[in-house]
Length: 115
Image 1 (cartoon, one colour):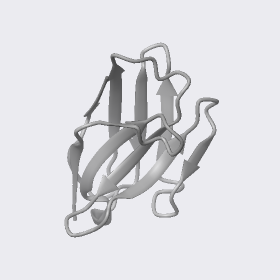
Image 2: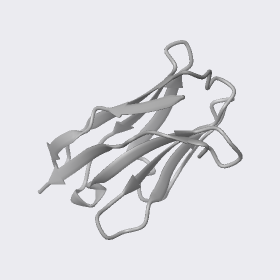
Image 3: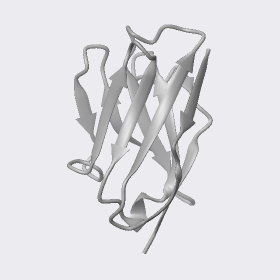
């Protein structure tokens, strides 16, 4: 069972990035999935979730700027990030399944937002 994030990179404040999380080895169609991030020196933060029925939730820090979605046919989770801020700089992780959508984890992808 693997989750693999991609799409991270460097962008200027106000810009956009789109992250992907591709699943393999398991069907995640019946699982909730989530995006998290961890900035240097800070605790990991769950920033968005999407249930198996596509119900979404967002942390206040990203609400209105980030959009989570999933493509079950392609077994991919997405995070569209707009209006990026320097404080969005972090390692971003996806996770899936379990009661709190954290049974499986990806390795992370770095997002750096410069002013």
